[in-house]
Length: 227
Image: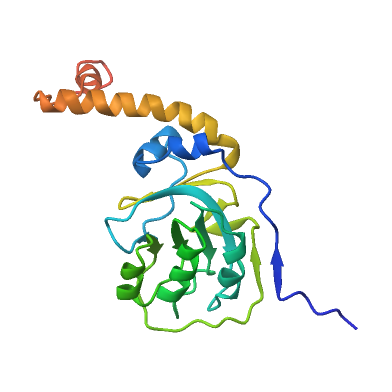
């Protein structure tokens, strides 16, 4: 007789960015984070902010919910630590909601700072009232099940990108950037350079800069042929 698989499998988080590492990403645009990763780390634009004013930066708590099911999201509630971003793999399912306002309220009450999924959401008015930033693929009135199976705390793939619990997530109106746990310090160091370059260029633009210096140099070189 084949043993029945468990309804839920939960891997308790064993790694998390330090408070200083988390603080280094607060208020940083997602585009800066992607630049600091040399163009890597962005989730596809199909996963977008439900409220353009929403922004969050925090450690990922991964959930493998599976299509049309949210049992794993609910099972993840006791594992949430203050400031976590719950990232739910809905299997890309678009036929019903990956969560609604009450699930968001449960997550926020448990300490979550945001919710990201590759499925749609429902109860948009209620979600806005809860006040937790959400990134999803759209809206639908369809209801999910809560029957499982599901997993919490394991590596998932969202929008074609691997994400694991403890990775840093930075999300805003531009989109979502994911920093692998092992690259956090490297990206923080690069963020300082990216921010300095962006600030310097903004100052030049305010002064009326029309064409970047490197473009002028290229146009004057033998790499360009004028006809």
